[in-house]
Picture 1 (spheres, rainbow, N blue to C red):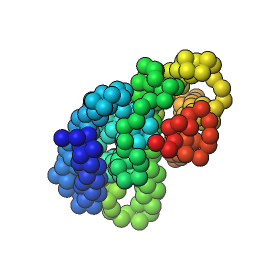
Picture 2 (picture 1 turned 90 degrees about the vertical axis):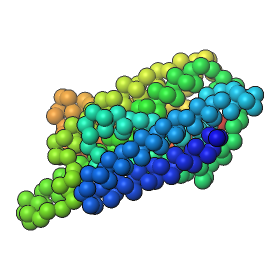
Picture 3 (picture 1 turned 135 degrees about the vertical axis):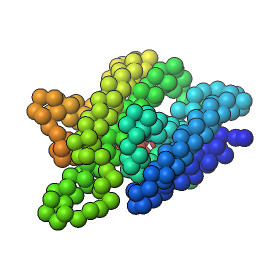
Picture 4 (picture 1 turned 180 degrees about the horizontal axis):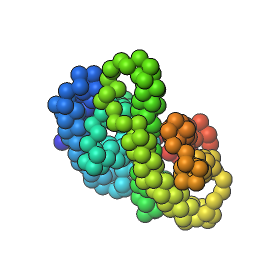
Length: 284
């Protein structure tokens, strides 16, 4: 059994999970939601083993590093963290319908990684040869994953809030009855960001420490650093507005979605379209 085979199995598991959640949403049959979640758990387990195998394979060929060093490995890890955060949310709240809005993010990541990126294991460039790699990447991507879950929940909130407003006039029943109440979705969005924000903060701090180790300076206004700071300010504004101004509902949902769009650009757009000290991760 190789890591490549397990990653392919993971991709199909996430596809099956997403489709089962869609059927659950349409048919409103609890068994489909349970099947979708169990399939997501299976995919998460397979991916966990695959990441461990890829780590071992890197040592077997004499490279020897954590599988977090290039674009392929980071996208795979991002997908893993998204499903992990969602699984923790499911264990606590059991709102299975959220899977229909979160699993597509994980599936898109895995499908792109498997079909569009170089999957080879390559030696680390000098700047990456540090234990800071683990600290920085893990904290950043756990934060990104929490923001991805918050984005999916925010999309659900906007759909639910719009339906509730129209339903008051028409009285029509719809699939929206499967959604948690709008106030619950609003609170889940806030909780997800409350998880992601300190993790992103730790990611920026460990990144600064790593930069000082690798390049002799804590901050150089590299495009990746600049965009990381922009993302941090977006979510800091979200929390500030929520706590001091009482921002809830649609404004909070839209700010969460905007924050995740900025996160994706920080993660992918900067590496793929801008040059800087982080460019080594772009094309691999």
